[in-house]
Length: 72
Image 1 (spheres, rainbow, N blue to C red):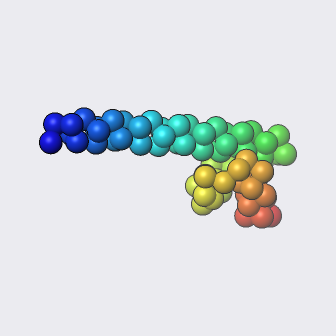
Image 2 (tube, rainbow, N blue to C red):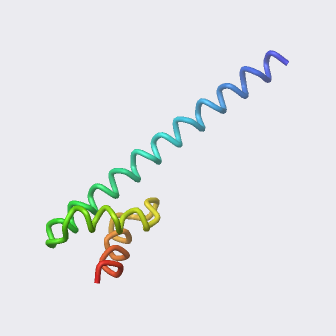
């Protein structure tokens, strides 16, 4: 049982690290998309509103495409 407990703990730690990394990447994509939309002249308020509606696990390009559709 002790051996299994250690293996489960190690697996849980790996899963937590992967989740943290994915979340970090999603925030970076959203940030990059927000910056691009702001350069195009959209207000930060509108950008934040639209980005909340979009799946942040998409690529930056897809986030921008969907945001532009929602903003137009």
